[in-house]
Image (cartoon, rainbow, N blue to C red):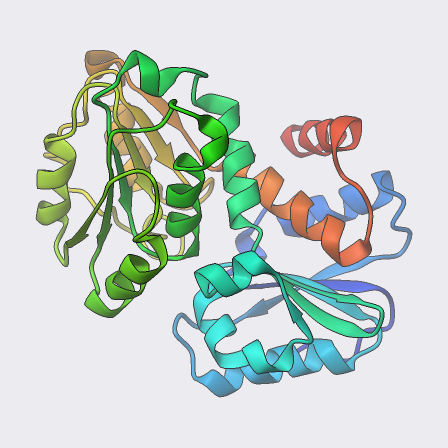
Length: 311
């Protein structure tokens, strides 16, 4: 059963995750709060086991909803499970939350409990920072392989196919997942993208290897499984060969990061761009903090948050 904190005695934001005490945000938030003028605001972690009973999610959301100084939360790992267990408790769910069936942000506005899915925004901002403009036109046969079918994986797929990119889009997106039910949900959500989609049930890493090794030059491989952070391991084996001139994105920024290390070992030979999840972490948190405390964190404020975090 989830251990909930006591009633908040000052403006409090929560981090709903699995191993929240290990996250940099616990040390970083007080520094950001002071710089952003949030006075005595604080952050507290709420650890919930992966795929916990529905009641754990409902008790957590009801606690935040009914406690006046509990202003909201960032949700990681549990985004889909929490949405499915608690969507009826929210007075407002944004279109992305309803489209993807997940939420990463809980906040309050005008007495209403609000849920947002921020991954489509934060993942897009992170990808824009390292995928060169015109990359897909430079490598017209290049494809994408997203390992995992959670909220982040769906958001990444949708963003890469967005109309705003014009013709600078991948030739195909592969979505691999180890469980059939979640993969079936992904098919329903992503079936109408303007980029061709292929969905693969891959319960073993060797099966992911086969998809990755067939990718054309310049392709993009993403670890969106959570392996290497909440649980050790990689969705690929050490024998897997990455595509030449490929882009490799490890969504995690902490943990054992086996997937990223696999790519780094081939970086020079394959001329790979290997990106970790740090920029994604910054955008993910600032997007939710902005929602919870109703402040704008863009431009110089965003740059300040990044500088303080790196320091």
